[in-house]
Amino acid sequence: MYIILLGAPGAGKGTQAVMLVDKMKLVQVASGDLFRKALQQETALGKKAKAYMEKGQLVPDEITIQMVLERLEAPDVNNGAILDGFPRNLKQAKALDKALAKQSRAIDKVINIKVLEEEVIRRLGGRWICRNCQAPYNEVDSPPKVKGKCDRCGGELYQRADDNPTTIKKRLEIYLKETSPLIDYYKKAGKLVEVISEGGPEAVNKKILTALR
Ligand code: AMP
Image (cartoon, rainbow, N blue to C red; front, side, top):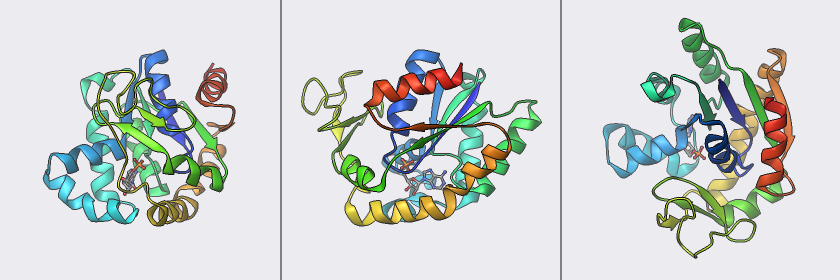
């Protein structure tokens, strides 16, 4: 099964991806996590992506598409994946469709997680992420049991450099311009399900699981 999680930054894609991985035994493929790992390891890919990420801009398509498609070819992704943060524009969506079709596969469902802009700014300002397993927390809505430590793996929690008001604004602008046309693209393909991000992560997860059944 190949599932895409669509939605503005802060909609809860990462939180939902982690919950779905635990429940559905699928692998999470998060383009942002792949870039952050490359950045941390100071690889050539990380160096190319750095300036774009710091400004909240999209990393160029050639780099991003190649990175994600390579990840999708790994043996652990054989049974499918939960795509979080990719595709982010039409070119990426079409490249993904084409690559999957070559293996006689296709996207099964696209979950569009809807959230209000003011909620995005509130959520991202209070977001903490595990350095080890990338599980996201929110200091108000979903704090970890022990401050600064991940509930799932005990890893250290940190705040992303691009979760600051200026970069969040830029990321939202780019989402509206580049990513939101994907809603129509997948609606036309008959794959889109819309879920409103309210009532907490568990409630949203229940709605997503119902939609996937
Ligand atoms: P995210 O963790 O999904 O919020 O992504 C963090 C940053 O990584 C984004 O602001 C972009 O700079 C870059 N990025 C992640 N996914 C993509 C993508 N599909 N296309 C281009 N850039 C991306």
